[in-house]
Amino acid sequence: MSKRKVYTDEFKTMIAELVLSGKPVKEVASEYSLSETAVRNWSNKKAPIKIEGGTTTLEEVNKIRKENARLKEENEILKKAMAIFAKK
Image 1 (tube, rainbow, N blue to C red):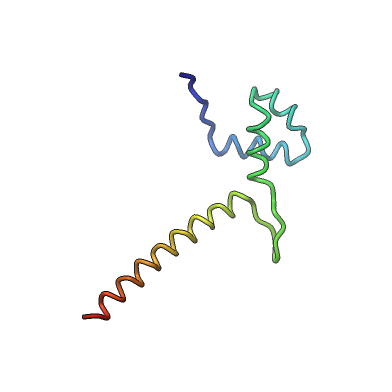
Image 2: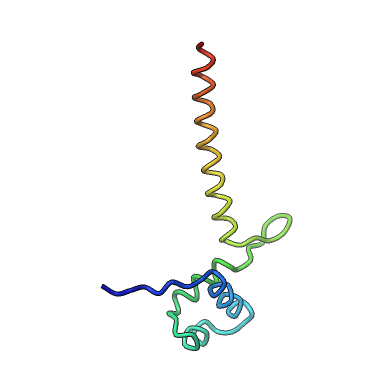
């Protein structure tokens, strides 16, 4: 089995910032001995996305989606509990 390298979020952010500042993906990948795919994925996650009222990143959007899903689940649980208590 091959062991996968695990990189810290700080390192990924640094690599993404290099690409977003204009350095070519191929150059960054070869300089840090990384795959171009990994560098491209990290930079895409950190790239700003223009929205109404400002900008955000894909990472922030994914975090908001997870929180939204959790809140929806909690809401459903509370609805079921209210139905149970309303019967009593």
